[in-house]
Image (cartoon, rainbow, N blue to C red; front, top):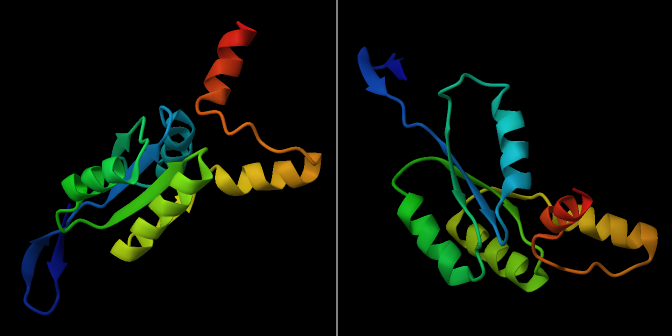
Amino acid sequence: MASLDLNTDEVVEDIKPIVLIISDARGDTAYSVVVAAAAQFEVDALDIARLSDATSVDKVTEFLEAQEQGRPIAVFHTFVDERLRRDVRHELVRRGIPSIDLLGPAVTVLSTLTGEEPSNKVGALRDRLVDAE
């Protein structure tokens, strides 16, 4: 993608944004949401990169550092572990990276609705789908 800088009449290469999907499981849930949202834009409007099995903030930080190269970044994440979710969110805020927690708010609402505590089991959806086969 290129655009014309109207101030200088030069063609400037646009930097393609990247959406990072980070999960303590495989990240299929977040990937599905991101792909559905991305379908509303041009096919090459952005890149998508995924980090699965993110079990520590250090692992997330390494992934972020590998991806941060002057490109606009947004993160969509699904973490079951509340502490990890909080710590990753703090790291993203510290870096000024916009993010969306796709799982935490939904689990909180369902917990309030049912009056039950969540299992906080990583990969629970995958396990449930396998058991149903």
